[in-house]
Image (cartoon, rainbow, N blue to C red):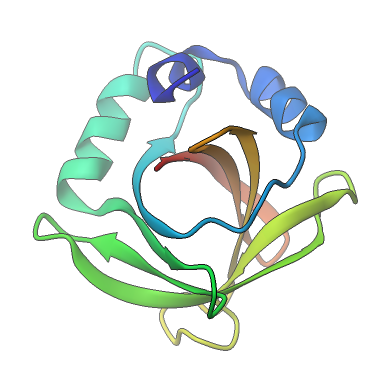
Length: 141
């Protein structure tokens, strides 16, 4: 499985995949990010490319310290720090890996991401804004 396959799935399929996946280990290292917006539509691939080029390129995890930074802008600057830990998912109450910006970022303090491992080196994520679901994303290490 890869990002291209995830972009073709419907929102329901992505939710089911997330629900049936285990949290997996807290990742370590650099991951390429793919925003999954309007999943399963003819636009999702183009939207993901535009987001990747101009805004968000991925995340860099320091698993031992339990933190990450997002790689943003066309230059891939490391910014927007989050705490990383395991907790219950807001989607289904099962364990997930939480990417928590509430104490580390003025810009994104209302954002919470949740990820689960689909297979080695591939994670599926959900983005929440004050408990309201926004979009999905995947991380490929």
